[in-house]
Amino acid sequence: MTVRVRFAPSPTGLLHVGNARVALVNWLFAHARGGAFLLRLDDTDTERGTDAFAQAIEDDLHWLGIGWDAFARQSDRTDRYRDAFERLRAAGRLYACYETPEELEFKRRRQMARGEPPRYDRAGLSMTEAERERYRAAGHEPYWRFLLEDGDIAWTDLIRGPVHFEGRHLSDPVLFRADGRPLYTLCSVVDDIDLGITHVIRGEDHVANTAVQLQLAAALGADPGAFAFAHMPLLADVSGAPLSKRLGSLSLRQLRDEGIEPMALAGLLARIGTPDPVEAVDRLEDLLPGFDLARFGRATPRFDRDELGRLNAALLQRMPYEAVEDRLTALGMDDFGARLWLAVRANISTLAEAGDWYRICRGDLEIERQEEGFLAEAAKLLPDEPWDGETWAAWTARVRDATERRGRNLFRPLRLALTGREHGPEMSALLPEIGRTRALYRLVGRESAVAGGGVVVPLGRKKS
Image (tube, rainbow, N blue to C red; front, side, top):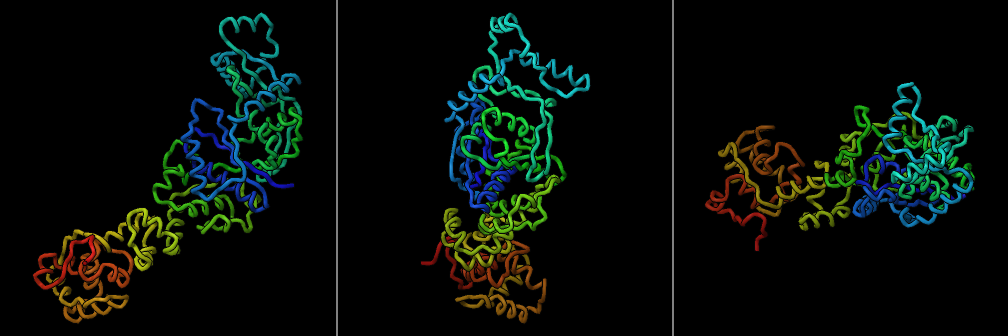
């Protein structure tokens, strides 16, 4: 059997980290077994779904490194859902209902007041033609429910283990709205049958849906045993509270804008909830060895933004300049250079932070100088260029001997004057990138540098 999985988001919002985790696990499962990954847009919700959200989902998946072997839209398959409607109705498994939303809510409240679980009372099955006609005369078209059988429904979940439901305890689901539009429960089953899906991997909030959909698949002539299911625990935040899809900071688009690297996020999402070490990877294929759904536990995994930040920094710190050169150029830093990247990458947690060090080394920098007498003395001892990785040690040794300063009293004021920062990359690597002209200007100011014979050009430009 060729493994065939699907990721089926609704284009009603931006892709959330919880959705991205499901997509990634599906992709890894398929690729670890030489199977196929299908992207299906469940776009029957025309009130909330938009083309912009659909495109954003595709863009975010590509950013995360996830491609697909096949693509489908439910909006292109309405004839298949209508065919299913006719077949179920002919088999006596679909029945018309007329209650208004207010009437259904009243019934639900009465059941809960009696301590009963809310379950449709199947009033639609016993309605007389006269009762139906009164609803139609009032302008109410019927909606359609699937008649569940009372028998046992069971499967062995690839994550949860044995799962069991009794059909008589479930509520007959609505499959078609009064306006004729099919709903998720039906569309998903029809699609999974038609598109040859073998494994359905999704969040544990769909467990009850699976019980209903197994009966529905059988009613449509499919073998329910042909499907394997895996229901993953939903992500929580570090406090254990459920993640809200309404929080923009948890969309892939927002994380991307904040400078999160896709492989840092992938490394976290692929391993969170397993006993395996969470680590950033260079490509998705690095996550395939040893991947197994059995590694995922039943406990609620916690998504930690701080942990994601650490993974992001670790990934950047080992990334070669060739991997970021085009991105830095796109940000207007075409002369960043491999030497500067190697100097700063250990001190950044996002690529955007590299821009701060670029401006320090390549651009203008307003410094509020302290201990000006000491800085002036140090400026006099600046060696001539060219500079390399040994220049800082040689220069500070001369300054030490001339001023008798040592340790923090020697190095701190020089670092502050040259970079404006208390901490940062090794000055032995930064000083050649700053260059003598900028160093002199920052130590004593432009006017003093010119008066002392230093050659100062407008910062941000190169000497001709």
